[in-house]
Structures are given as structure tokens and as C-alpha cells.
Image (tube, rainbow, N blue to C red; front, side, top):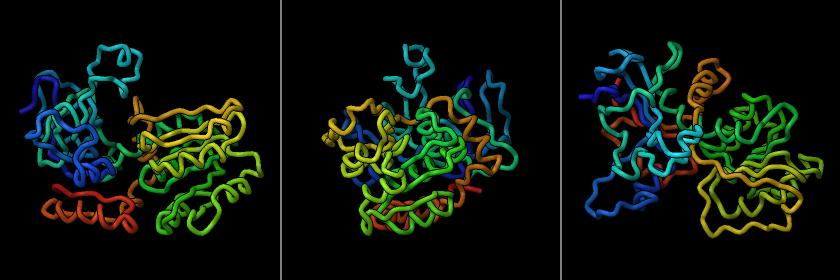
Length: 325
């Protein structure tokens, strides 16, 4: 049963994140100290409230909700400044300290990090608010505005979420680069101005053409690749911004001679205070998360879901697991 400040949620949908796939293949990014520690998977989830703690006031049984999967300490400097996403003691699902995952029929979660879904949003969309909030956080941190030229490196889930977030903030000139045709088709359907297949075109030359040799105001690296990190400085304008959204290898190289003209490099870590604006964008129809779902699995087929996510990256843009109705 839930604690006094928690809600008990019957989980209905869980999105499959790249970090879950990594955990399935190789274990979590931060391995537990105890080698016998059980490790759960899943953190993108939504469902229906079935019970509430004695001090809960915002929710009642029957409410459809989603959650922020990271619960910070609430009292460190970062939390007090509103930057709770970088709290050093955050308890994030499927990772340290307890490695509890969302792939379960029921879970308890604090009221303060639970959100009620609008009537016109279903719980599949609710589960996908989490990756959408990553894209929204990246776009808002970058100060995307109308008139800005944008280049997005990577058209996986986070790249496509970032594309849609940029459009929500008024950007109309957006180039998306990837090496998989299915992802680029999706990017075009979601509103990319230009799509570039890095296996068929010279990415740098094509992006220079897109920006009329000026470079982009903002370059988003969402692929988590050493190759795209290396490309980014050649694509950004003087005084522009490079936003590192993907989980990039630690030894990736950047040519600092290409960014010494007051280019800003900023990393993006999850999100903070972005769920409300992201939920509103999805509810209003300006942010289409459901069309990105290419594969839906029953919870009984969870092994298959992860094996296909590992072996079929070419076809799977976003997979979700249906836990219950």
C-alpha cells in the first residue's frame, strides 16, 4: 500500500528507452555495488490510480496519471534552485540507488512527482511524456525561437522528440540528420524542413547548404555518437549553441579551434519542471508522440520486446509495452 504521501498506480503502458535496452544488453550505466542486486527496467510509464496515501490531496482512485521517474532529495542546493534533475541523490527508476523499474503491474510513487492526464490523452501518450520532456527541456534550454535555424543530429526517439519540441517553440527551419531511412521519413512527416541521410550525402556540405554557409543557430546532438559530436562544431554558426542531448562516449573528441568564436556547448540532463508544458503540448495536438510508436508488445512478450529492440534498431523507432488495460 502507498505511504502517506504516495499514490498506488496500476501501470498500463511502459515505453522502452535506449537506457533500458542498454540495461538489458549490458547492465545499467551505473552498476550496483552489490553484484546480487536485482535490477528492474522501465521508467516511462502511465496508468490509473487505485489507492492514495492519507496525506494525498491531488489524486483519487480512478485518475489517469503519469510520473516523473526521478525523485530528488528536495533539500540540496540544486533542488532548492529548481535544478532537481541534477540532484546528486536523485532516486531514478531502474538505476541507483534501488534499481526499481516500472515494468510491473503496480507501483507506488510520490504525489509531488505524479501528474494527472487530461481527458483527451490516453495512458500510452502519458507514458511517452517522459522522453518528450527530454526534447522539450533541450529546446527550452537552447532558447529555441521563431527564426532560428536548427540542425538535429540523430532521428531516434529523442531526436524526433526534440524536433517536435522545437516546432512547438516556433522554429520552422529544421534539418534532421540520420543514417536510417525509416527515421528520416518519420522526421519529414513530423515537420522537418530538410532530412539528410549521412550514408548517402556529405552531412557537413549538405548542412552548410541548408544554412547558406552561415551555420545553424543551434545544433542538437541526440544520437549519442562520437561521430556526430565531432561533426557538430562544423555545423554551428559563430556565437551559436551546441546542445549535447545524447549520452555521448566519454572520450569523444571536439575540435576546439572550430568553436573558439563564442560558441556555447551545453549538455542536457533529463528535464526539470517540463512535464506540465509537455503534457499541454501533447494534449493540444501540437506534439504528436503516438505516431512515433512503431511497435506495441504485450507484457507477456517482454523478452521478445527487448530482444527485438536490441536486434532490430533499423525498424523500431519507439516500442512500448502494454501492461494492462
